[in-house]
Image (cartoon, rainbow, N blue to C red; front, side, top):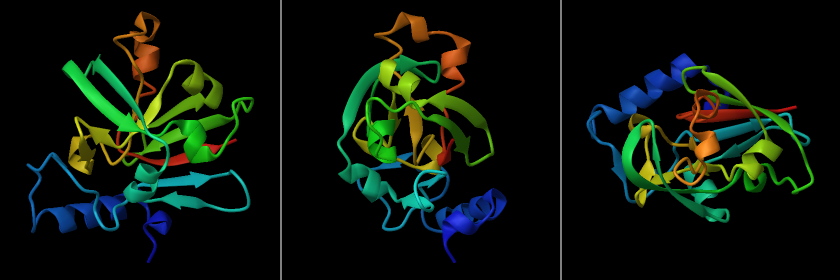
Length: 169
């Protein structure tokens, strides 16, 4: 059964069941991606549904952001592709997206805003692949330290962690 077709509660149960016996919930990150982790589904763009595994996202052009966040008081290095690379969109495109987390949290963002404010879909933190237990496998991050105008609640609300789906309008 494909993970993209399961509901989020079923996925959480599957993840919890697969993580508990082998590594426990104390594990925060790792150097290599899982062989087949739950990662990211794109809906509403093109002829069908696109799915990305963590390794797929790692093969896209990567950007780094070193920043503090409300959840990281010390400067932290995040790495991952930008939204345009994942959506295969062009700089002139202005697509409206719903970012959906594993727990069904939803935030709206346009590709233009994401581009203008230098956001990334982080898959690594300080060189280690993110896991579900550490805001992963995908975490939306903006360069808050470099962009004071982003140090507001509205910008923080777009930092979806455990991002599993993007719906493109």
